[in-house]
Each structure stands twice: as structure tokens, then as C-alpha cells.
Length: 230
Image 1 (tube, rainbow, N blue to C red):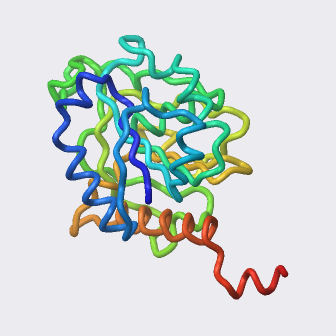
Image 2: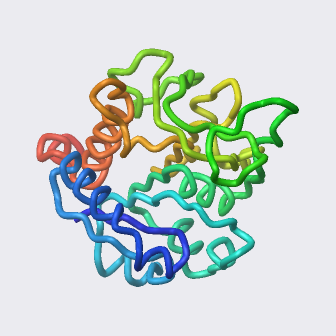
């Protein structure tokens, strides 16, 4: 079983029909059942009972100061102390980064005469659609991808500065921290939405397949590997 954590408000969680589509997509790529939980339900004890072999933290649309996700001690402890492979998408990427000492903020205000790409958070610059992202550090997460990938972005906030435990893996012209990983733990974050990739721009799909493949290897080592270490 894998786990999808919805890190927005409880009200949106109850109304978010798109999480079913995301769950189905994750199940297709992971080839396993996916349980959906709201972040307020997540704690270290529960994770240890459920034993998910991979955890995906979804996106958010609510401003962080409007609810308690960044102040939720149980969720933070679960992210920071669990040993299960994890990846965050968009808002989930930002939340994980913040839990590990990173700073967050809006990308910037729109310049005079600059078009607003979405009614969401008017007046702020947004990445809204498919954008090129450059891989700046090799990682197995990008297996099968070119140095520049095309991925779906829907955000106006970003990670401004990574915490000391996190390593930058990919950047774009408008958003420096597009992908990170933890230095010693199996934890990744992507500012883009790999779960929303399509057939025209399949890089996000490749990245998610790689993540699930690597997570399976980490949690369920092959019998051959067990023999070599016995």
C-alpha cells in the first residue's frame, strides 16, 4: 500500500473530487492500492501501523497562514522521523522543505503590464502550465529524462532557500528550487505536479515511475540482495 496525504484544509479535503483522479493515477504508476488521508490524520504511530512503502504529499491552494499545516506537530514529526520513502508535489514539496528548515514565499509581484496567467492569487507572478526545468544534479529520480524536462506547474509560492539537510536537484528560470532531495533520507520534493503529466510531456510520469521503483527497491530488497548481505 502507498499513501497520499492531502495537506490543504479539511473543508477542501471533503470537497476535493480531484483526489480520486490523483489516487487512481498513483495506483496505476505504483501498481498498488493507495490510501488517502488528510494531513491532520497523519502521525508517526499511524504510519508505523499502516506501513506504507511510499508516501506522496499533495498540493495545496490555501495560504499557509490561513490554517495550521505548518504548525501541526504530529504531521511534522511524521514527515521528519518516519523511515518510509516520501515525495511532495507543489505545496507538499514546500511543506516538506519548510519542515526541514527552508524558507518559503511568493515568487514575486507581477511587473507593470505583465499578463496575469490565472485568476488565482491575482497580482502575483505564477507558473501556470507546462514549463522547462533544468536538472542541475544527477539523481536516479531522473532516469530516462533529458537534462531539461517539461513539467506541469501551478503555483505562485516557492521555496526561497533550502534548509541545510536538503540538496538542490533541478531549477527553472523563474523558480530556483524545482526539485530537492534530503541528503541522507529517502525524501524528495518537486515544485511541479508529476502526477499531472500527459502523453505530450511525459517527464513527470517518468519521474513518478522512478520514485516508486526506487522506493520498492529500498523497502523490499530483492532476495538476491538479501543473499549478498547475509
